[in-house]
Every structure is written in structure tokens, then in C-alpha cells.
Image 1 (tube, helix red, strand yellow):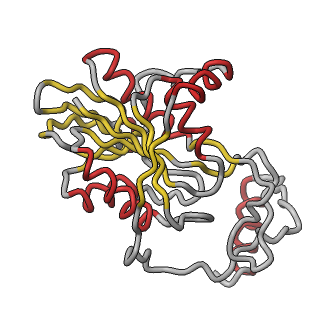
Image 2 (cartoon, rainbow, N blue to C red; image 1 turned 180 degrees about the vertical axis):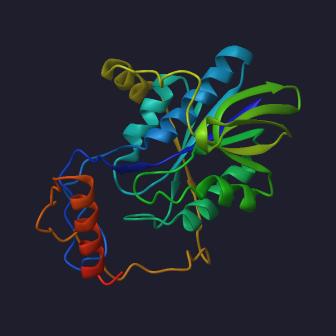
Length: 254
């Protein structure tokens, strides 16, 4: 079984976020980045399948100028058999459309049975990458996946819905899956093991092309939310509170 996992780095939200001079993106010069949490779960899901059934796990990532090498070495330390950096013009924010096109051009040459990626990322929250990757690769897709079982040429996949509902699907391989959560917590890898991987692992570089993959929109302005005057705490009887709520709603022109 051949599994390919796509990962990306995203801003660490514990950091103070600042905008660049043009106000169209974050100031990335001093910003700390980490691997997207859902992508960590996608990698863990792949490694669990490898542990249980045997598989070749390849991790791919766009070269976004944010020291993606460290993330790829960490993936190798966790158990990935092959790590690939997709080179090209990918610095700054890369839309899901562009990422999918560039990644698909590389992944298509790997003949994968499973393509896994996180269901979404904190820097866009659009949940489109798995869907767009599947389109570019000509594969079926399922997203918000919480469990995978592979039996021969088919996979049984559990998909999470709202209200605690879970759907179970049987799909023919190859397939692209957007992972919500792995069956186990993503494994921890100590720094010493990552350093050993840096000495023993070769990061392959393959050129990627996202030309023509417009996202259909352009960011013209980003800004921090304006600070209001704070909340008004309502007290009194139910009738008094209800009357005040109506008064506030009317004052807003609703």
C-alpha cells in the first residue's frame, strides 16, 4: 500500500499576530510556524496503517520558505519512509487551489493508494484542500474522516457529521481523504530523534507548478477587529431584561 500525506506549516496562534505594511497578509518575518494540527493527524493515520498492515508512507510539503525541512525531518523521525519538498514560488500565503494544483502534479507521479491531508488549516479554515486534490488527481474523496480501515482494494471510512452523527462509507482505492482525527493521538518525537533523522534522511526536491490555479478572490485588506465598548450586563426581572433587549435591538435598526 502506498500512502501519500500532504502537510503544511501554519502560524502558531500563541504568537502575537501582526500585519505586513500593505495590510494584505501577516508579517511573517518573525512569526513562529508549526505543522498544521490536522495534518499531524493525517500523518498519524498513515503511520497507524503502516504499523498495522505495512505501507510505504511519503510526506510531501510545499517549500514555503519557512524552514519546512524541519517539519519533513520530524515526519521521517516519526516513521515516514520518504519525504519530498515541492519547490516553486510558494512563499507567503498559498491558496488551497494553488496548493492542490502544485501538490497534485507531484503526487500523481507517485501512484498512491491513499492521499491524506488535514481536513482544514487555521490560516484559511476553508476545508477545501482534500476536495481540490481529489479533483486534480481524478480520485473520489471523503472529508472529516475519523477512522480508516483498508482491506485489499477497498477502504472503509468513518466520516463525522454534526450532532454526533457518524457515517460509514466503503470506497475503492485510490481515494483522497481529509482527516479530522486519527484513531490515536499524534505520536511525539523527541528532538534527539529528529536530529538523527536529519543526518540519515535525504529530502527529495521536486518542482511544482500552480500556474492557472486562481482561487477566485484576492485579499485587498486585513485588519484587527475594532475594539468595542464592552458588554452590557442586564439585570432585573425577566420583563425588565426582555424590554431592554428589545430596546437594544431597535437601536441597532434591526
